[in-house]
Image (tube, rainbow over all chains, first blue to last red):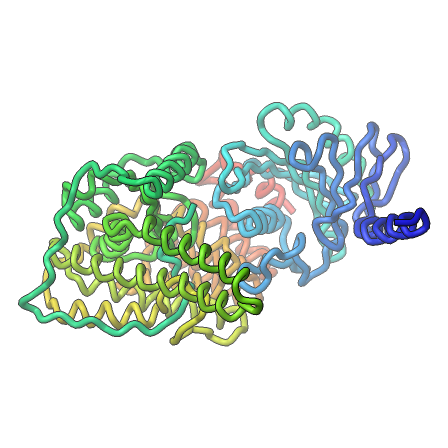
Length: 197
Length: 386
């Protein structure tokens, strides 16, 4: 193989591989940035990594050690008739849809049912549910826990969300109950507390 | 590692009905207790099944309630006999779908979705007997051998024959037809267990007829065509529900045995778990299928847990008409006098979402009065105050 042909084939291979995903990105502390392709902004006080793969069209995930170990996901203004995240099997297991008339109590229920269907587990349950001001609206803060199918590792989560202008704004943080949840809870809460519209 | 399941939704080939004269029900084959795998294939299958069982034993989905486990095992033993049922470790899994499985080494699972849908001990016995049939007939081993000889053939065929795709297709088709034949033979030995037990053998066919109804209701609820399959699917591993209902009904009529299905005992044993299993079903976003299941369970009248679950189902869908209907179901549950505090919560939230703030406040205050330490009490309190 000539050098020229080799260079060409390497370039062709790079073209095939490179543009497939947007790539992950380091989020620097201090600056206020928009998340989840929406007008929702947050101001992190510490470094995070934004994953290139999005759970849904108006969603975005940040992590510290990988999304299996700590997962901070933003849902930015999900419209009526849309699902929280992408359907895995729309025909046989469609996810529930956001409705503009949802009450604040329906937000934890939507998260619970979406997780139950997407993860195929009946172990998903909502814990405490309390009122909170979120992104300038009357919102809800709730805790949850689940175990993925075929695993013994229990995961804990905390979400806060609100229906603002008929759209759902939500931030969830989840991590294995073992070690990771407590370790990055403060950093995740700081980001969620800074949310503004 | 393959496990055999009932897999309700799968479909396929018409199986000729096997009729038996009433006076000659084939006797059950002699049973060898503490069977050990005898050759290299079987030892391999058992080793993998053992490994799977070690994982299953610690899984979070296993329901460990001793009373429920003892009850389900009791039904298995009364169906297949004491000597046979001792060979089985039975695990009840909290998975809201209709299924039961059997592994080579005698690991049986039954899913909570199946317990919710079955209506009597006889029907539960039919499902468990079918699964035990796979074990007794050593289907895992013969399935593995069939698959291996098929793949050997395909490996050679691709070398020997230039264009062997047609042969591959027919060999692959052979696997699935073999699976279907196994399902049918497990169904038939299941009927024989029922025939020799105290339960009526007609119960097996009832199960499949309701499964068909539910599949149609799910499809219609999702604005799809009811897609019940009545004939062969090339890749289907199980006979159609229609074929199963038909040949099981024929077999039961030929046997014509009596006995009590023990529907009341079944309902009583499941009662502590019914609200949990109903909630798991309602949260599946399957309005048509859930409504069908509820209607089937309410065949003898709407009880408080069923009315409450129906209210949750309608409130979940949340159209204005659904909210009116949901409030009605919660109210009916409350009027029966033994409704849980959550019925007042559902009533209040259905009314609130239906823009009836006044009556909603009354119901939500009643919820807080009855369950002041509820996990969502702080939020409900602010809803009432605003």
